Image 1 (cartoon, each protein chain N blue to C red):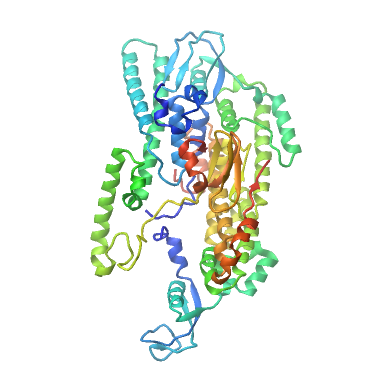
Image 2 (cartoon, each protein chain N blue to C red):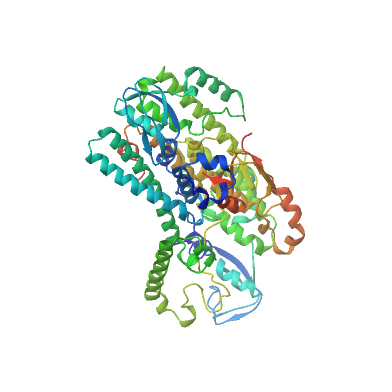
Length: 210
Length: 220
Length: 185
C-alpha cells in the first residue's frame, strides 16, 4: 500500500534471467528420430540422427538430460575465443568485448548439463569466471566514478546478468544523486534566477562504458 | 500470426519484426516491460487472448497425445513448452494484480489508468477499493472527527487527494532500444539522448514511458 | 502526497530542529524552560521538524540549521567522509537535508549532501560486493538509512547471483548457502 520502493526488491531473480536465456538457440545433434515439434514458442525439428539442428536452449537441455542429443557449444565458448576475450577485457579500461547478452546464463546451463560436450570444459569454465570477474570489476570501477546527477547512463555491452546484479544498487544511487544534486536544495529566494544555468551545468549525461 | 499488429502498435510498420516474432516473444516482452515499469501498462488484450487460445489448444493436444500412444518424450516436451508459456502468462497477470493492489486508490480515481486495465482487472480493482475503503472506514476513519474522515484527503481543507500513493515515475529503469531513435529530450532537462538499436541505458522511466508504450524501447 | 504512507518520510519529519520564536504564543506547553504555558518572543525551543515547518509557514518561528549540517560536520565530512558516523547524527541525513535546505536559507547544505554521498557511496559499493560479513557490519553502523538501503540492495543482488551460480542441482544447496540470512525467496 505504501508508496515507498522496496530496497530489496530485485525485479528479476537470477532464475528468471536464466529462464529468459533459455530461449536462445543452440545447435544440437540428435541421436534419435522424432517428428517436428510444433510448440507455442515456435516449430522445431524434425529430428534425424546425426543431423544438426537449431533449438532453444531449454529444449536442448531437456533432450540432453535424456541422452537424446549432444549439444554443440557456441563458437564463443571455445577456449581460444575465450582466451582472446579475456585478454581484451584485461587490456582495456573501458571497452568491453562483445559476448552474447546472456553469456553468463548460457555458459552456466551448458556447464551444468552438457559438460561432456564442451572441449576443455574446466579451462572454458575458469575462463568464463575470469572474464566475468574482470568485467564486473570494471563495472564497479566505473560506478565509483559516478559523481553527479545523471539523467541517463549508457551501459552498452553489459550483459543481462550483469545488468541484473547492478540494477538495484545503481538505480538507487542514481536516484540519490539526482535528489541531492538538485535545484530544490537551493534556498527559495535564490532559486528562480539560478534555475536555467544549473540545469545545463549539472545535467551531464555520462557514459558508464563506451 | 496474422493479427499481430492489434496488440502491438509499436511494430505496426515493421514487417520484418512482425513476421519473425512469435506471440510467446511478444508475451515475454510484455512481461518484462510490466515487471520493470513502475506503473501499470496497457493490458495487451489481443495478445493475451491469442495466447490463451494457444494454451488451450496445446492443453487439448497434449491430452490427446498422451492417450494416443505418441512417444512419451514428445509429450513431455510439449508439456514443457506449455509450462513455460503458462508461467509467462501467469507471471504477467500476477504482476498486474500486485500493481493494482498497491495503487488501488490511485487507479480508482484516475480514469486514464483504469482504461489500461482489462475488464476482469477493473472488477478486481473495484473490489480492492471497496474492501480497503470498508476496512479503513471501520478500523480508523469512523473514529476520527468529522473533518478527518475522508479516505483520500488528510482533512476537509486539503485541496487535492493528498493521501494517495502513486507509482514513482522517476524510478530509474534499464532499457534497450529496438530501433534507431533520433535525439529526444529527457524529462526535466535540456539534455538530448540518441539511441541506436540495442543500446542499453539506465534512465528515468518517465523519460521513455511513451516509447515503451509505442514499442520502440523495451525494459529489461 | 505520494509519500503519505512512507514510514521513513514520517520518521524524518520527527527530527528535532531548534527554532527561535518570532511571535509570542500562549496556551502551548512546548517550551520546557518556561514556567508558564506560553512562549516569549525570542525563546529558543527544540521542536520536531513537522511542527517547526508549520510554524515557520505562519512566520511564528525561524529555524536554525540543525547541528548535523553545521560547519563542524561539514569539516569532518571534508576530512574523511567515509568514516564519519552519520547515523548517530541523523539516520535520515540526506532526506532531512533535502527537506530543510530550502527552509533555512543555507546554500551549503545541498553541496554538503552531494559531497558526502559522493564519497561515501563508493565505500558502500566496495564493502557490499567484497567485504566479508564481520568487516562490513562494523562499517554498517555508521551508515544512514539510505546508505544502508543501498548497501543491502547491492549485497542482496550479489548474494542472489552467487547463490544461483553455485546452485548446481537446483533447490538443494540453499540451506548451506542461505545460512547467513533468512531465506525470503
